[in-house]
Amino acid sequence: MIAFGCSVSEPDAYLRYAGPGLRLAAEPDSQLLILAAMDTLARSYNLLLDAAGQRDDLEALVIVHPHAEIADRELASKLRRALVDPDVAVIGCAGATGVGSIAWWEGQVSCGKVTSVYTDFGGGSFPAFSWTTPGPAPAEVEAVDGFLLALSPWAVRNLRFDEQLPLGHGYDVDLCRQARAAGRKVLTADLRVREHRSLDIVSDRELWVESHIAVARKWRATLPDPTGAEDGGQAGEAGRLWARRAEAERECARAVTYFRQLGYEARLAGLEQSLRDVTSTPGWRLTEPLRRINKWRRDRAQAGDVDRLSA
Amino acid sequence: MIGFGCAITKPEVYRAAAEVGIGRAAEPDSEVWAQASIGSICASYNALIERAAQRDDLEALVLVHQDTEIVDHDFCRRIRASLGDPDVGLVGCVGAVGVRSIAWWEGSVSAASFMHRYEDHGGGDLPAFSWAWGDAPPYARTGEVDTLDGFLLVLAPWVVRNVRFDESLGQFHGYDLDFCLQVRAAGRKVVTSEFRAVHHHSLQPFDDPEPWIDAHIKVAEKWDGVLPGIGQGAGTWEERALRAEAVRDAARLLDHANGLRFEARVRELEGALAETTSSISWKVTAPLRLWQRRRARAR
Image 1 (cartoon, rainbow over the protein chains, first blue to last red):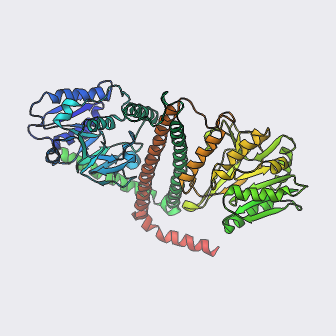
Image 2 (image 1 turned 30 degrees about the horizontal axis):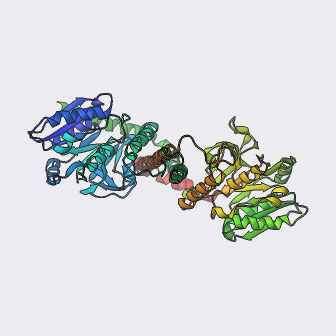
Image 3 (image 1 turned 120 degrees about the horizontal axis):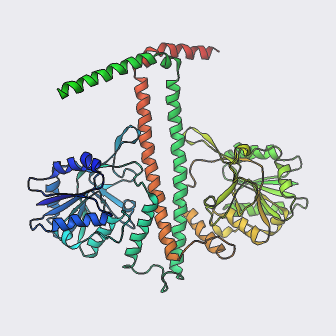
């Protein structure tokens, strides 16, 4: 039995996105675990693990974010194929190798048929992670995107989301690292998923920065000390160079981001001017009443269609 | 005598920008040393300094990037006023305080009397905050700063005879902060003044980030502990590294988001344009626009 879980922090989003996706992907015997979100995402997700772990017939638990919409009727069979390998613990629709931090997408991305759907600027969609060139799924990776996580029975019974990382970002990378540290595999699968996200990607960057630090600090403890110092990284030559390099890269990234935004604004200014030029011509202004009448007719026709459908 | 120096890698850029500005600012007795670059900017500038140092009557040496155009006709009068203080070693029109690295713009910028003029994406002008002093924000002021932007540097005779650009820093980056720090370490002042320049520059900070990163590290290593602030930060090395990596990745994330927002907005505008120009109204009024264009041409 494949179970589906969602921790509902935004009921509207669940009704619009995650809910229809779960109905599409679930099988007749699937268990749906739809629970109200608690104070942290890790605690909420652990409750899903606890509930699913009680089922002896569990084949997998699929956890979706309320904004993730599964658009793949074959999801269950694809997961079963991936889980034939008993070492597989975590499966996602997008992930990466070369992951150095919670910004897993800075690695080499592998991605199924994942679409980012947005409502800003009149709405539309992009292939997910379009700023990079994703490789195909399936692939073995180091971490997957937490928007959709499929966990093997072993993972459900042996892994837990770390409740000491309470800030809500990086829980996916952390769980994947736990799985790999236990000798298990993390995979991407060729799943069709729509992620309904804001174009801002992350709404609170300060919180994201703190999460980045917390996850990095946790996993550094298990790695050889790159600072080369015995005193907490205060004096080591390697530590100093590590910090110097990181600070230089930080300021470089900020400068690049700033200048790129200037470029975007310059290109948009040209397009906006073209639109102004077109709509400020006397001919365009002269024919405005005509467009208003046309719009009124279209709206009326649409309203008529809705009435007919309702009837 | 006020001398002007420029190291040239692209003669057409020099002719279009620096030469125009020098022509505007120079006095009849000014010497102009416009010479081909001889490698790194530090080596080129040191060669220019050596030439200027031979002049006993030198009042100042003005070093401009080839893409920098001075706009003030009374530029020489303004820099003489700044150099009236014998402790002033360097003068510029863009500077900052609280500087910790070669990314001096991450400090508190106190004067930015320049215009960024770009040709990419159809071209445009981006006046910085004290391009027009009447509209400048309350923190805008001239006076002593930690560092100047190296696109335009005015060197006092003492500096010309006693300080040299550090040729170990690399090809191009960080030389301005390092030079200002040398001047300040020697007890001289670095100040901004009320003159202005246009920087003709593309909308990208550098072609290859790696030399910039390398220079950032070298300058931090060289000056940490020598002058306050430079190369310093809060916390242990580990804490600094972890936070810097997090903020770096957050900046990249913002960059990705900006790219998505840009693409989405382009789609929206292109859609609106296409909808407009394929509408019946637009087609019906085509003869009117044709007539207007003909009338405009006839004028």
